[in-house]
Length: 493
Image 1 (cartoon, rainbow, N blue to C red):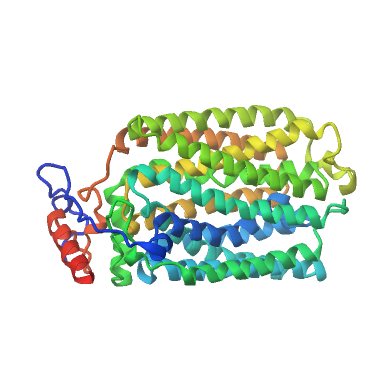
Image 2: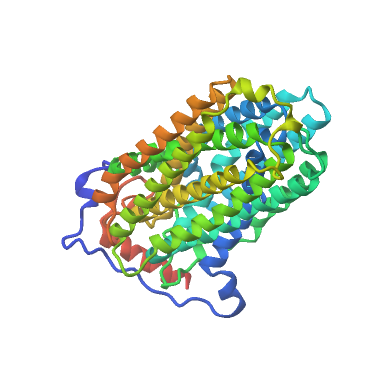
C-alpha cells in the first residue's frame, strides 16, 4: 500500500487552481424544496432542538433541575468523559455507517438521560442510575454531534457557511428556549430547589419525537448544493482505512491543532455560567426564566455572527479576523463584568441561603445579573459559530469535516469533564471563574496563527487530501479523483 501521507501524493496539481467540479441541475417542485440544503440543515436543527436542546435547558437551569447540584455535576463528568473518547473516533464511525444512521443512533441517549432525572425525582436514591445514563448519553452525543457538524458544514457553499451555521444554531437553541419556558411555566409557583416531574415527562416525550426525525432526512448521496455541486460522500471503506483517514486529516492539515485550545474552552465556561452563577444565585423559577433568556440570546448571537462571517464585500481571511476580534472583545466584557459579581459570594455564603430565599426575578438586584447572563449567551453563540466557521473554512469534504468535528467534540468534552469534576469536588467559585477567563483568552490567541496561515478565499480539491483517498488508503492525484467523480455522478443520473 502506498504511503497514505506522502507529499508527492497530495501535491499533484501544477497550477494549484484545483479541478472544477461538475455542476448539476437541482430538482424542482416539492422535492426540490424538501431536498434543499437549507431545509435539510433545518431538519438537522430540529433533531438537536428536541434532543440536545432540551438537555441544554436542563443544564442551563443548573444541576439538571435538582436542588443537589453535586449529582448533576457527577453525571456531567461521566457524560463528558465518555463523550470525549467516543467523539475522537466518531468521525470514522460516521464515515463508515453514514451520517443519517450515525445521527439516528446518537439521538437515542437523550431520552434515557432525562428519564434518569425523572427517576431521581421519584426515587432520591437512584443517583447511580442517573450517572450511568449520563455515561451512555456521552457515547450517543459523540455520534450525534460529529454527524451534525459534518452535514452542517458540508451542505452549504463556501459563501453561505456562516448562514447555515446560524440556521442550525437558531433552531437548535429554540429547544433550550422551549424547554426552559416549559420549566418556567411548570415551576412558576415553585420556589424550592428541584423542578417538577411534569417538566421531565414533557422533555422525555419531545426527545423521543426528535429521535425519529433522521428517518425522514434526505440521503446525503442525493444532495445537490445551491451551486449545483454534489457532496463527496464517504466510500464506506474498512475500519482500518477510516483510522488511517483520521491520521491523514491531522498529518496533512496540522493547523487544526491551533484550534484545540478554543475547542477546550468551548464547553468549559458552561460550568461557571450554569452552576456557579445561575444555579447558585437564583431560586428555581428564576433559574428557569434565566435559562430561557440565555438560549434566546444565543439565537441573536449566532445570527449576528452569520452576518459578519458571510459578508460578501470583504475577503474570507478579513472576515475571520473581524469575527475573532468581536469574540475577543466579548470575552473580556463578560468576564470583567462577571468578576464584579463573583467577588461578592463564595460556596460557603451561598450554602447559608435557603433555596427559596435566593434572588427572584421580581427583585431589584436581578436586573444587572440577567443582563450579564444575556451576554454570556451571546458569547457562547459567537464562540461556537466562529469555531464551526473556521473548521468549515478549512474544508468542504464531509469526511474531513467529520474528523474535525470529532476532534472538536472530543477535546471540548474532555475540558467539560474536567471542569464539571472540579465543580463536583467543590472547587471555589472564583477558581473556576478564573480558569474560564484564562482559557478563553488563550484559545483565541492560539487561533490567530491558524487564521493567518490557513484561511484562504477558496478550498479546492488539492487541499482535500481525505477526499482523494481510495478504499485501500492510497491518496490519488486530484485529476484522477475528479474524473472518477464525474463518471460516478453521470452513472447515477
